[in-house]
Length: 200
Image (cartoon, helix red, strand yellow):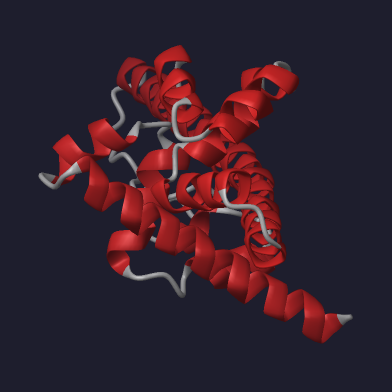
């Protein structure tokens, strides 16, 4: 959300202009920008500010709590899955370097060397998202996503690709990627919250 977007919002009603004039710091916060980037949330915000009533405020409050929870959850996913991806790359390089070293040593002794591909303690490159986390609960939740949802989550958090990059990779629209991503996050949060509530 840029300055032009805020200026457009200010034109919605006098109350909106007053809101931004009275809350200049809020307009600069990234989490607020992210909230208003969602069409549904932006509509709720406009309704609550321009046509204030109890139901509108309650809907906006619930929407922002949901958005904030999503921000926290996506930060956790990004941290967990990206770190696993880095670990995989490191161990794959170590495996390749070790095999090259073994091959060189065996070549010097004129011994025939057959590289071992299936080494059990090496993280396997896979599209099975369940193998990307050591958190058992998260692993079980990830495996319950659809194949398409898993792929989007892998690309987004494992490889840090943007929606546009994923869209080009999958030959779909960025909007389709965004919807798949949103549905995947909602499903993951629902599964995990249900599990935590049952364990409480």
